[in-house]
Length: 190
Image (tube, rainbow, N blue to C red):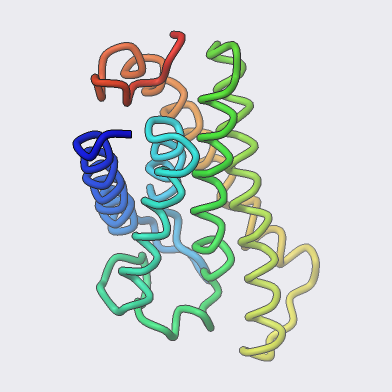
């Protein structure tokens, strides 16, 4: 990788971190975790930048939030580690990594393939989010959810929004993958 293409990836990674931060501010307040557009940009970071750079973009986003910049949907800073949202946030780099690995290595970029990858990525975020929600509620907040409460507040309420973000991610990937991010950064083999 040349220094100019590396610089381009660093800039694009910072751009996707910024887009994720903007997505955090577009939210529907829910308790205990708001519905946001963050995951749309997590999916697209992996889809457009690939595994390594997509994950780096989300690690950069987390670094900014843990450092105290107001980039998360709720509070920022080190106290986020004790927030019900921590599992969802920590899943972002893994989800971008997952999308990048399978979209860039997959032989076929059909609608069905993209929907499968983005849906699986959404389920990864939601699964780790539910685990984090349970741990924070039980260990830190000393509030025990029933299994039903846990799955309704940590998973079920997010499914319609995640479905829309998965569909939009697949559409944008198909639409922009042929044209955007020229110079070796577009999704290959479309």
